[in-house]
Image (cartoon, rainbow, N blue to C red):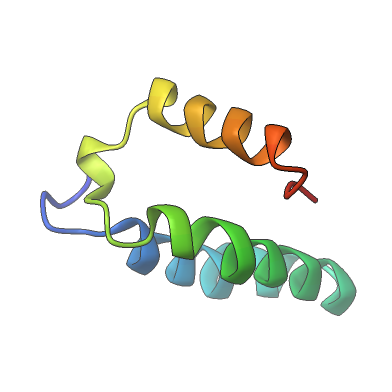
Length: 71
């Protein structure tokens, strides 16, 4: 269970550095980091990870698709 204070921003930053950077090519890392920076952190970064729901994420995806802002 994630720390109850861990934010989505902190989780994504760690995920990029600990999971993506060492295991993927630099171009893949750069693409993932760009999606995180441009789309995920602004919309979800301040949320507590433990309170993030699949429905909330799907609602964000739907909003971004409707606005033409999804990569």
